[in-house]
Length: 206
Image 1 (cartoon, helix red, strand yellow):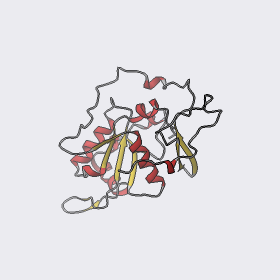
Image 2 (cartoon, helix red, strand yellow):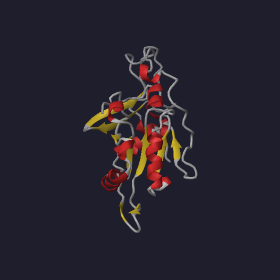
Image 3 (cartoon, one colour):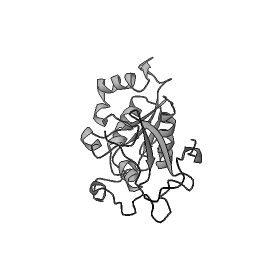
Image 4 (cartoon, helix red, strand yellow):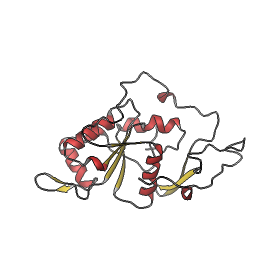
């Protein structure tokens, strides 16, 4: 996977209003922000420059559910990715790579807290039975084959949910794997919205 480079940055230094001490909150040592087109408008993805910014209350709780394994899909080799890889998929999608689909697997009410830019909401509950079959053909580039599916032109699905304690995207991924979807074309952003928000990265309305 290609990592982000300084050519993606728009500027390398924050304004005085954003970082009064003159030290911007960077994504990487060289990268300040990534500008993409979201719903027809330019959107700058960057970390929150407010030194007093705090996580939303929802993501502060530490009691939720069980911690998801880093690779919960064995023996299938689904790659687990982090924030920089997610940003690279966003960049590639913005540049017109239609072989990629970023999927928010949460239920619609959860997306009201914000989504990762360029993601589409396909709730994990829809990925079963006839509904999953329809989605695979209409959205994922899968065609009817012998005996059931032809995944030759299947898209790379980059999937996330609430966080490393949330089982919604793992459930969706396991259902896709059982249907024969190639593990090499599924990416699991385990950190999900909790990790994205913990770095102060830009979120968008559903």
